[in-house]
Amino acid sequence: MKNITLILLLISQLLLAQKEMKHEVYFETDKFEVPPTEHNRLLMFLSEIEGMDIAKISIYGFTDDRGSDTYNLKLSQDRANSIKTIFSNNEFDESVITNVDGKGEILLRLVKEDDISKIRGLNRKVEIIVSSVFPPKPKETPEVVDAKKREAKEILQGELKAGDKFKLNNILFKTGYSKLLPESKETLKEIADILVERKDIYFTIQGHVCCTKNSRDAIDRKTKKRNLSVARAKYIYDYLAKKGVSTRRMKYVGMRRKFPLGGDPKLDRRVEILITYVGETRNRNN
Image (cartoon, rainbow, N blue to C red; front, top):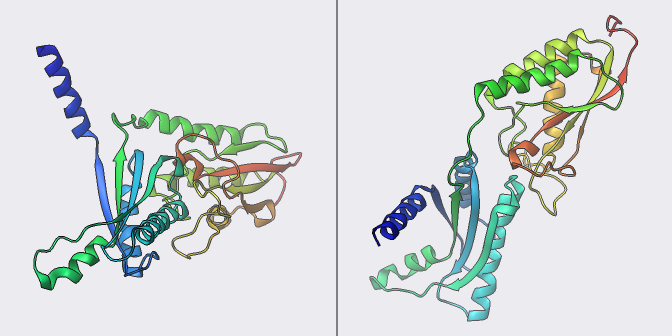
């Protein structure tokens, strides 16, 4: 009996240790479009959770007590769907969104008669619950990061042929943006230095995004355009050009989400190099 009690206590402690974050989005009467202020609040929340190792996301829509049951169920479902769309457009993995449900109305509970409109306003909402993976996945050690840096450098410094393609490891982008994370800039500088010297290779920079099911591409939060994979490739292109790599040797293209790797979504926010031509000598002029 004591052993069972101890096991139950341990399980409860593990469940409590699982990080859970909640957010609520409020809507106007009879509307399911997210108001601008609420949209900005939601984007801030997405920025908070983008570093989490997410196990699941639950999205529940609600309405106030006015309207028929059928009307309220549809409206609450439309509200939940509008939030899921924002998650998808901002590159969150749709496979972790396990619930997108319209719950219908929340019954009005009177505190004061003067508070009825305020209470109804708070009931016109979507609740978002984000749960992290537990136990958390181990982070990469500095040794693993260094090994990935060496991999790209060694490939570029070795023998290459047209058709070779490789991922720029440790080149990571912030969710929804084409700008690199600070820790990636040193790696990119090292790659740029090699490409300046290797004047014999011509290549295409391929940008990728993740988690934009049923959409052409992901939305760039900075420009609000649905061209994030192109923007990421162009960011690398522009950086290399500034460092001295001839633009005649480079092209860039957006691959959208056509080639997911099937693992952690952040690995799909990536850039790859496709070798298109290799000259006879590394010492040829640009």
